[in-house]
Image (cartoon, rainbow, N blue to C red; front, side, top):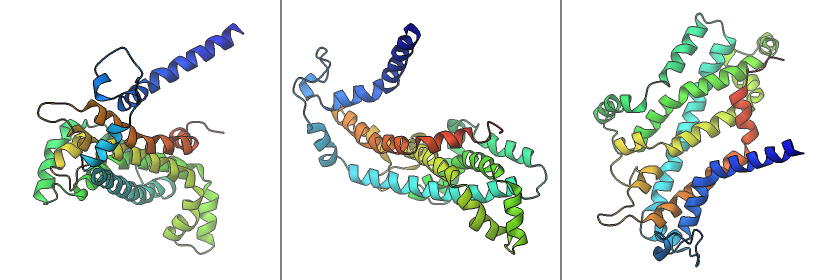
Length: 271
């Protein structure tokens, strides 16, 4: 009984610790301006939605949400298309040095973003893509591919080779066996990979700050960072905006949390 009680106390403490920043932002977003910098009270005495109205009336909030939605969705689609083809080849086709190739792919994700931002900026500017959606889509796709290839390679490996060989014997070409047989069987891997790539693209800040300069292509993290004015910081608006853009991600994670765990642990246990 004592162990069970201790377990639940530890579990509740952990949940509160992890959700603390989100709850604090939620409380801040509901406080009127006069209560923002005063403690106590911790909770608002007169909850108000003025900050939620302000972010849509005083800022191009719809535009930056649209930019993030287009960039994140396009990155996810491109990563899945390119990554699934590469993962299928590494998992099922006769290719030499597969382990070495996978190690090289993984090494791409180990570069600290700050070390790559300068050369990438020169390339983006030379291509004339600065302050466009494509600058972010191309960059995010590059950094999402290692994760995509690794997760999908594990999923393709879990599918018995006999299924792939049977498709070839029945007359399918390699590509037909890929999209008619292997893709439907690896659907859980696609769900989990898509969610992880989408969340990464939705939250990325450094490249978005460097490669965008106007609201035409500015995404949510940079858009919120631009809220402060010359003489004031609108903490209430920033908190409200953070809550609004976080809710879709929380819903996605709750809806597909089993798929995410399957994707992260695929191949970890051999039956």
